[in-house]
Amino acid sequence: MKISQEVKVGLLAVVSLLMLFFGFNFLKGSDFFSSNHKYTVIYDNIDGLTASNPVQINGLTVGQIRNIKILQDKGNRLLVTIEVKDGIRVTQGSRAVLADDGLLGGKLIRLGIKQGTPELADGGQLVSAKETGLSALIKEKTLPVLNNVDSLTYQLNRVVGQFDQTGIVLNQTLRAANAGVRTLDLAIAENRVGLKTTLDNVNRLSSSLVETEKQLKPILAKADTFADSLQGLQLKQTLGSVNKTVDNLQKILGSINEGKGSLGKLTSNDSLYRNVNATTASLEKLLTDLRENPKRYVHFSLFGKKDKAADTKPGSATVTTVTTTKVDSTRQ
Image (cartoon, rainbow, N blue to C red; front, top):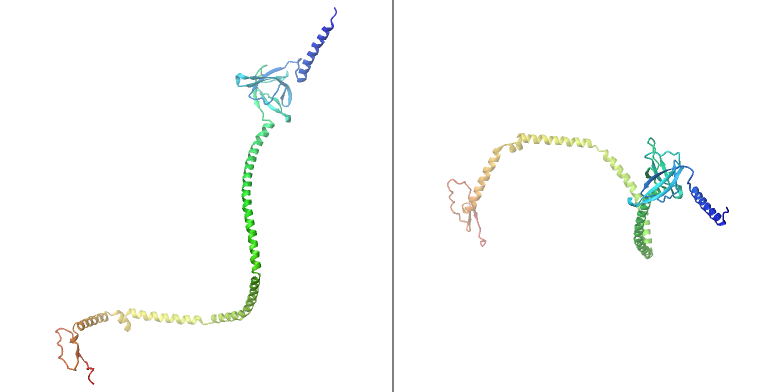
């Protein structure tokens, strides 16, 4: 039986397509001649994980990502199916950690086998977990730095704005200082002669002070000699004499207080005080009677005629009558 040329070409094409399919999947890591175990894991976000990404245990590749399916009825969570080589024992409670694959930014799943638990059945579900990748770590570390940089930039902008105002004030101050310096130069130029005269006077005053110092030295020497003379006075004997005088004065005052002597009797005897009071009372009566009856005591006569002596009232004090004779100024 002859096979036509067209059939041969068709069979060759089918074989080529099958070889291409199996070769492509073999290059991707699929092994059609070995029995592998499949497990599932659900993630909220796979961060760019794709099919055929590796599955590793302690850095050793033991499988690959088989399929990724979105679960829209569960909040768009992602169901990832992994395929692990035969002979790898995966237990219940093992973790499938989504991690970064080096510096290139790829993703992989690291299996964390839980020891001491039964083996997970084929098609069972692993515990999902995520590892902080390098990019996330860089983002976590750099975000506070960027915030601080923003704050620092804001503060620097404020400081620069204040420097602008300070620059304006500083320019005004410098202009005022320049004007003051020019005014000072002008004042010095105008008063140059006066300043020279003042300096000459100061020089002469300095010379005069030198001469005065020379003249004061002998005076100061004499003052020192006078002080030495004062120190040489017999002050102790003088103070002794003063003390003796004070003792005598105290003795005299003590005698007076005790009623000794004339002064003591005057200060301690009450009879003198009563006599003085009686005399004062009599004198007051006499002055009162003299003011009320002056004719009884004083007689005025123009011609020298004497009147009879005025009768004294009974019981009154005896007073000598004084007769005053007034000479007429017309008589010669």
